[in-house]
Amino acid sequence: MAAACGVAVLDALAWALGWERTTALAGRLGAASVAVLVPLAVRTPLDAVVERVLTATEQRLEGAWRVLAGVSEPESGMIGAAARLDEAGMIAEAAVSLLARDGCAEGGPSQDGTVADRAAQHDAARSGSVRSGSARRRRFRAQDARLRGLLAMLRGDERVQMFARAELGSVLDVERHEDRELLTQFLACGGNKSLLAQRIHLSRPALYGRLARLERRLGVSLDDPGSRTSLHVALLITEVEGC
Image (cartoon, rainbow, N blue to C red; front, side, top):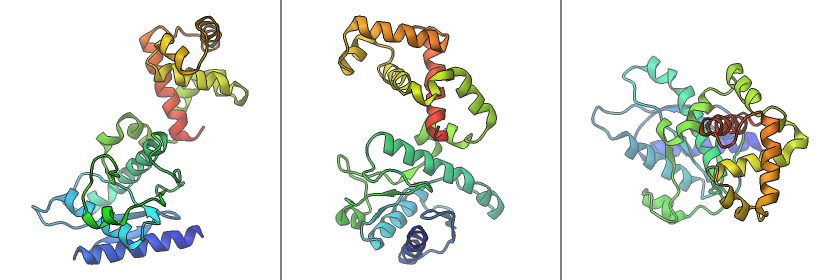
């Protein structure tokens, strides 16, 4: 089934490139992900071409799949462009993670960088434009993925993983799931304990007790902005690494 999906995406992309009257070097990277090098004339707007190709690809797939693209900066030579494929792929993976986190992907992320989206609208695919409200963004660059994108590019780096383990310690243990969720919620509230108490429906004394125990396990003060920043980065690393 996965192999069939990959072939379908590649076939749809080939059709879309023909519809755009351009050629490209393309090949499968995974079950449903492809790498593409598109030659462009000097003054051709890159974003417009990418958007039209992605729109046509979704249209060809008849709304069965949502298609996203990580876009790297243009290069004048083939070697430089090929070297940027890994960067573009990592940006796409980071974008999938962002969409899944924000609840924008109904089917959740696939392991290879595409998202199933059974609710894709044919009229949006035909228009080729991104509309507000129900709009579904397709193109992402490194600045769009931001910190998560950077960490995605560093995925697998032992030094990054070591940092996350050092920051979070036993909170990463399976039996400490509640501690990890509490820390995640606390950081999402910007360290505002009153807001957190309301969000998780817990009395302030009970919450303060849990946070005090969490601080002891982490060995840091949660009132310190630097500690909260480091812990936030460490949690993002575990998300990107799939820990």
